[in-house]
Structure formats: structure tokens, C-alpha cells
Amino acid sequence: LKTPRRLFLRAKSSSTTTMANDEVIGGSLKQQLAKLFEESLRVTVPEDNNAMGLWSKVKGKSTQFRGPQPIGQAIMKNLPASEMVDSCSIAGPGFVNVVLSRQWIAKSIQKMLVDGIETWAPKLPVKRAVVDFSSPNIAKEMHVGHLRSTIIGDTLARMLEYSNVEVLRRNHVGDWGTQFGMLIEFLFEKFPSGEVVSDQAIGDLETFYKASKQRFDSDPAFKERAQRAVVSLQAGEEKYRKAWAHICEISRKGYQKVYQRLGVHLEEKGESFYNPYIPGALELLSKKGLIEESEGARVIFIEGKNIPLIVVKKDGGYNYASTDLAALWYRLNEEKAEWIIYVTDVGQREHFEMFFTAAKRAGWLPAEDNKYPKASHVGFGLVLGEDGKRFRTRSTETVKLVDLLDEAKSKCKAALIERGKAKDWTEEELEKTAEAVGYGAVKYADLKNNRTTNYTFSFDQMLNDKGNTAVYLLYAHARICSIIRKSGKDIEELKKTGTLDLVHPDERMLGLHLLQFAEIVEEACTNLLPNVLCEYLYNLSEDFTRFYTNCQVVGSAEETSRLLLCEATAVVMRKCFHLLGITPVYKI
Ligand code: ARG
Image (cartoon, rainbow, N blue to C red; front, side, top):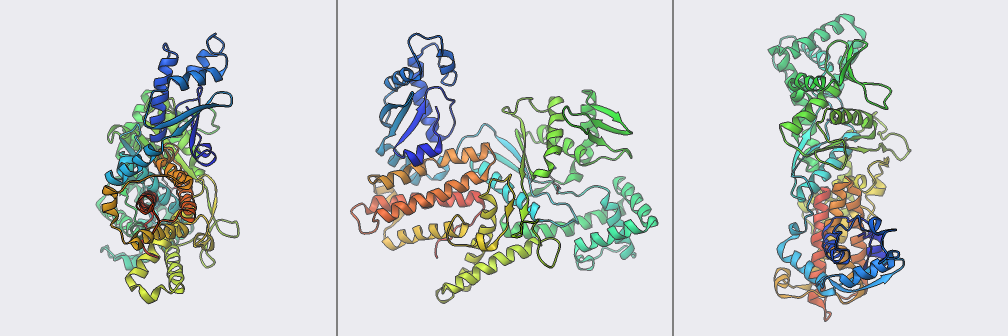
């Protein structure tokens, strides 16, 4: 049973096209239809109750069916009566066209309005997931790549949470490793008295990092002290642990500012957290015969890869890979996560492929990719500037994220003032709206692209109020709210007492699109592609515009029903915004 989205909604808004020989795709509307068809198949070919294998099994063997057409006919004939389906017909080589019942579509939407959009949450085959995202490196700058990871990871977490999956939102910060020897030693050098220095004294951590790196590279004596400091830190010496914790804390405050603005919640479990678990994890891999000696290091050879995965360096130290193996073990065994999702740039694909393969060979993960527990790498492309090169500002090498968000907000505020909003809005309203639209624009511009492609950061594009932007969508939602407000009707009351009916073709089209929400979220979750949801949202607003252009709402004979359709659209749009981490606005 196959219901391609385009065909289903766009080309044939009134019917769904199915063919007997395709696999069942989940999703709420699809799933309900699939059930009907399975029932029909049970009757049509009694010895086979599996819709998926039907065609290949019948092909070439059956004298009863010659080609998919007669199968389609029989399936149609045996389709159980259902309030969902209005009528059926056969088209082409064996497509079963289903016309959904107008009453059923309307009833389903109205039920959602009464019971809440949570009832439309898709069902996913996992209970608990880890989403490992954002994950900047302490003392190094949090660059636009980390912004992408933060935005994409947050949306994935939100979609899974909506689908009733318990999500452990993990910030796998780089808070461990040899760079800390250098940082600590530099801290001791600058503040020899040993007292805990204030954050202001250290100033900008990035500058601090660069200065210490310079010292490290130019002075062999300093370098040696720094290397000894790493040993002291890893041995747990109090003075060193304290200095380390202090540096981490300053960094953390910086990230927190970004997260707070973006409304992103994360729980930090940095690399240091997994350090004690590394020996045990490596021991398990060793027992499976996976770890070998190679040029003084301990490595795992992966078939098809030229270089092995190093898990213990020549000097006996652990690295990024050993930490990730220990973290995976911890997430699977201690946290009992069934799906572990890592959001980083595509440049790290190889790293993930290699340690996932190692985990499969160790039996930690099943060999098949469609089975759980599962580990997935969500890779994303680069952020480019309008010159087509890696995104950076004129003055500095990289972009300060907080500055970027500030700029988006202030540009939005200026646009609102230009539209004359300063006259009748309070300062707070202006601020809040500018924030919602500005931050929303930055997020949406990122999310609407297929994440694997590079995307060009452009304020002009993302803040345009026409086209596929958050600004346009937020305004569209605010307009729907204002239609409802201006009708003067109590929408809560209408939900209970009014009746929704979808008479006009554009009403029906909009209704069908609304009904597809669950399967879109399911698809976006399953394939870890937020752009699928963005596309749905944009199409929804287009369907609404078509409906609103062709159907009078306020003052028409169908006012009640149409107001309910407006409300349902607003509810679904708001849920989309929520899943994308965008704050809706109600007034514009
Ligand atoms: N700190 C890393 C970086 O900035 C990302 C960490 C991703 N998570 C992981 N478990 N490897 O590139």
C-alpha cells in the first residue's frame, strides 16, 4: 500500500492511490487505510495475510490473477465497509483509488480540535532515545556548525518527545583531552597566587585559548609543564581538577547564553563523564578480539577502511573514539536507550561509521540497520556566507553566535517599527515579537534545507516576509488568529457546538493536508529530516491561502464550519512551530 504524498495530496486531493504490490508505510491516515487493505487482502488471498509479500508471491504462480489489475479488482471488492471510505475505483495497471469520506475527514479534524493535537502524535517503535547534539568544545569557540547542531538536534528531540519517546538531550561537550594541560598551566602562570580568579579576569576564553596555545607552541619548557599538568589532572590532583572545573564553568556560561536565547534545553554529560568507563568498554571489545596492536597504538581494523580506528594512542592516552565507544556502551547499558542519535557536521561521518561498525561487530548493536537498538549519525553541511565561502564576518574569523542572534532580532524590530507597530504596541510586545521572528528566522532558514546540503546564511533571505521563510509563516499564522478574533465568536464554544463540513474543494484539500500531519512527523522522525516538516508547514500555509482566497469565512453561511477549519489550521501550524523550536506570534 503506497500513498505518495505528492500524488495523494496535490494531484489527487480527493483520493488516495494504492497498488497491491507495495509495502505498507506507517502513519496515522495511511495506517488506518492500510488496516482496511490488509483486511481485504486476507479475504482476497486467504493463505496470505501479509500485504507486503502478496504480489511477489502471486506473480507467476496464480492462475486466478493475471497481472495486478485483477488483484486490484478483487481487493476493491473485498474492502470492508468503513466510514473512512466513500468510494473506490480501479485505475491504470491496478491502482486502487480511494475517495475518502467527507464526513470522516471533517469528523477526524473536529475530534482533534476537541481532544487536542497530542492525540495526533505518531507512534514510534522506541521508548527512549539519546539525542547527542550541540556539543561544543570547552574553551574553543562555539561556531556556526555548533549552532546548526543545536538547532537540528533540538528539533529532532522535540519531534521525538511529541511522539511520546523519552529523550535524553545530551550535550557531549569536549571537556577532556590534552588541551587542558596547556590551559591550566597558562592559568597558573597568569594568576600565580593560586586563588580562584574571577571570570572577568580570564576574560574571553577564546582569546585565552589562543594565547595559551601560542605559549605552548613557542616555549618548550611551558610545553613540558603543560604535558605534566595533563597527567596531574587525569590523576585527579585537587589543584588541577579545580582549575579544570573553573575553565569549564566559564565556557558553560557562554553556551548557556546561546541556549537560553534559542530556548534549547540540554543536559551536559561531557567527554570527561565517560572517561572512567573507557577501560571497561575497551576490555569488552578486546575480549571479542576486536582490538589489535598497530605501530604502538591499540586499534580496531574496520573492513573497507584504509585506516584503523585508534582507541588507545601510542602514549597510552584515550581519544575521541575511545570516549565515544564508552559513551555508546553507557547509553545502551546504563541509560537503556534504544535509539542513539548524533548530530554533527558531515565531516565526522567516517568517525561515526567506524565506531558504529565496531559496536556492531561487538554485538552491542544489531547488524541490520532497521533493527533496534540503533545508532544514527545525523550529518549536516557547512554554513556558507553570501560569498559562497565558509561563513564569517568581516572583522573576525568566525561569527559570534550571540551577535548573530542579536542582529536577527534587531533587524526584525526595525522592520516592525517601519511597519508602524511602535505606535500601538508596547515596548515589550515589540521586543517579544522581534525575538520570536528573529530567532525563528535563523532556525527555519537552517531547518528548511535538507540538512546534508551546505546552506547560505543570508539575513536578507531569511527575514523576507514573502516566500518560504519563518517570517512569512509566522505572519500567516497571526493572520488566521486575527480572522478568528475579528469574527467575534467564541472558538472554544464553537469547537463543542459547531459542526465542521468540507464542501468546497479547497476546504477539502486543506482538510486532507491537516490530516497528514501525523505521518509527516513520523517520516521526519524516522528519516531524521526536519526539512520534511518545514515543507509540510509551508504547503499548509499555501493550502490555507487558497482556501481563504476562494471561500468567504466571516459573514458567510458556512461561517462556523470555516472558523473551525481556520482554528484547526492554526493549531497544526502552532504545533509545527513548536516542533521546530519557533515561538508563534498571534498579532501582527
Ligand atoms: N565536540 C565535537 C565537535 O565539536 C562534537 C561531539 C559530537 N558527539 C559525539 N558523541 N561525538 O566536533
